Image (tube, rainbow, N blue to C red):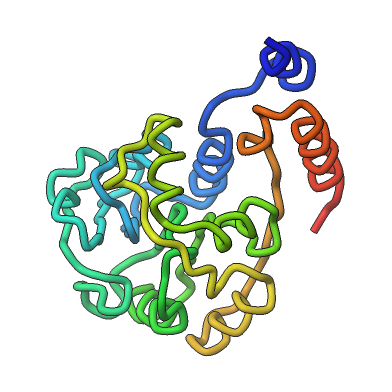
Length: 220
């Protein structure tokens, strides 16, 4: 009851997948009709905001999960990994990755592969958690099985919950991975939404709300 009251007071216009909505807006802001786009880690297509089919000339996806081949958001899906992207050099104008970077074992290799398949002047846009955020800290301190159970409570199947590494999830780590691949970091934005992990606890919820307001009031 208290959680619902706080929801109504603190986040009256909250929408689920708010972070994917923001990321979608960022991607749409750079797309052109003639572009080829690669969704790295496209999976089965369970996030509707990542559907850019019809907005560009061609949308391709790569994922180790074979369900990528039937992803309805793609013109073509290929089974593969970020360390060995199964496309030729200079194929894409834009590469995107939605909540993928935190799962990488060898992010520098993936960044190099992204640079290889991008056309000159191409863009790599990704959304990923901040390693220093309290949620990422909790994730590093708890077993993967806990993440599967918790995400199932939130409506996500265990097969769609993957181990996290956080090896390119700070400003410095991203800069190093990008530099090693010959990529330039144009911007990094820090955004915060409703504190989902803290909502069951009133004091935690309020602390998370204050943290969110502080982050969103800061331009970085």
